[in-house]
Length: 204
Image 1 (cartoon, rainbow, N blue to C red):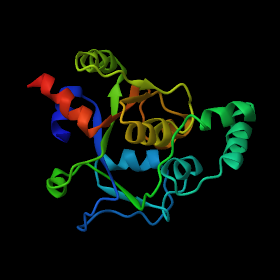
Image 2 (image 1 turned 30 degrees about the vertical axis):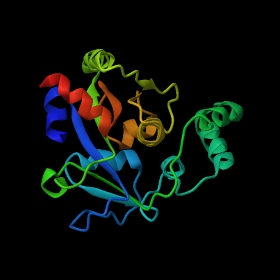
Image 3 (image 1 turned 90 degrees about the vertical axis):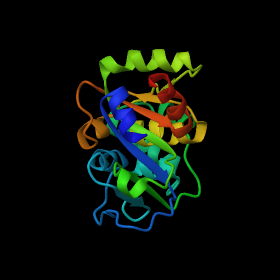
């Protein structure tokens, strides 16, 4: 399915597995990483994120590894000169997961043949979004477009797509643009497995 998504939608695509039981070789970074950074690397090599190597506070909040919205709101507010009240309100609308032990991201079909991903994360050229939204409408799916510029890939895409089972679209955040490899003309899309399956039937 991964190759079909890349062929039909264009752009870059990675599979996301939450608490998968895969026991073969996978890269487990020793250094601390951002979630968006791991997504970027996973376009080429499979990566496993855990509570020990996921370092970004926003991503730790989105994955449920560490919940401290009061502190996080103050940090985001201070770094971006945005009122704390605005950030707190935004965080209350961005979901976070629970019970996550590890997250596998990767593009290797060879080691994933027997595992169904929970969702896909895509970096699509902006001009592809119109066609995607048109095809989503054909299968009755209305995407969710994040109005916030923070926690974009980890919260607005990963957590929102998985928990709410919706197609999520984000324009990225300063951190994901700098560390996540999102190009100037790329938009981030979260695509739950079930919706991806329905979507691909349009191309058959």
